[in-house]
Length: 249
Image 1 (tube, one colour):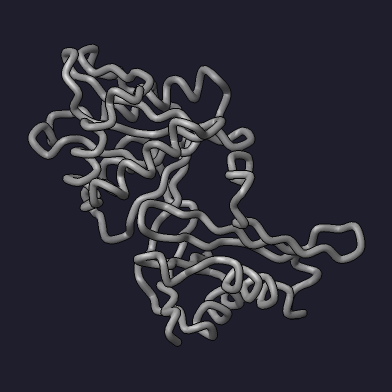
Image 2 (cartoon, rainbow, N blue to C red):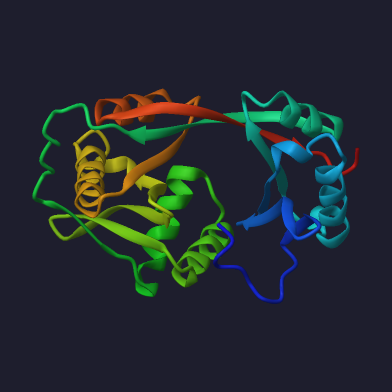
């Protein structure tokens, strides 16, 4: 997650106990928003480490310049939830993290008319339009995110084509032995035609061939996407809760 960071941006904060890294906090500007995540070594919790990292981040980052500031924590972490709420965080939404499982069945063959190719700068307008429709992003937010993706190491923004026509987009990020699916959207005019399923099968088939685990995130409040992912072999592994930080508090 920290491999592609602007050298001139103060986005990562670390705490060492002696020579040992015992805590970190990272800021991720995404479009007009800012996401915050981090952790502390289990043996060093309840010592104010994360609180100090958070204070450093708030002093360094102009949080008022962002439309939203989101902090996330595992839904099962009472300490994470307690910290966020103590800083004025207000619950926003939850996402499931899902992993593809081999249930012994043959992976469904993708529709041969559906293909994936690497996205290029020339695809910018198509990607912006799909983001605006699928994720209700502004043009500026989509352009900023896409430009960043094109420069990141280990991230592959892809265009979904059917019969040579752009019908969607998706990004893959390799982290360790895992591949994560992000920013998956199909144009509304062609939804319900098996394009999403074929795209997932192409991605899963590639991951199997490379010996990688495949993960994705989906909003708990998106039952249609959840059903699609479950029908393609993905299972819910854990839940992340997102809270909006109110800087005025």
